[in-house]
Image (cartoon, rainbow, N blue to C red; front, top):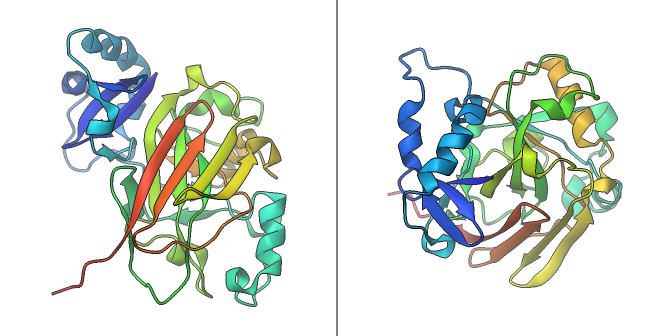
Length: 289
């Protein structure tokens, strides 16, 4: 099943190149009052909602996927966990390129660990990446994104995939500079999720997925998740050993080699096998009045 959010927070079931509006099923979600839950309600109840989503799709006329504005398929992640330098070739290019490392030592992921991105940086494929600091280098980074489906606390690698609700494509946009990663990667619009999320029952092996990124049709990144230094199972286990993962939390698994700058006016095309593809526009941040 492929599920998207679009337009004015509509919920859609994606089949081929069409979207079926299944927003009506959201009325069955539990109502919440302050303090709000630490989970994404849709993801927390996804398994019970899937039959209703399929049934609702039978009652509506679809619209072309190209006609809607795609939002992030995950609305309320409690946290965005990210894996730095998790491909060997990207580690090598980061260590060799001073425009990436700014004369600081790039340490292996096994030593430096994971980091968190602000949830306020999240947008969908139909929204544009906005360049806030055009005087600095702003890079693209394509990544496989894992969406946690149930509470994961110190889970084993063997059982790790049992905690996955689904997968989507991620762009971990980055300003190069000396600041900590969490600061340089958490600007508004610098975390792009899309185009939809694919439920785990349709993608049971995340370790053999081709990914391709182009900018204005120019090839930039081309890799396979088999080249991850730390794979999806190990990342889930490792992250859950430090903090409890809740339904709707996401793990960005890292980017391969080929990171490079983008400018306002560019169009990023990202594709991952079995998930789909998305076109994301880059624009300048409007002046503050």
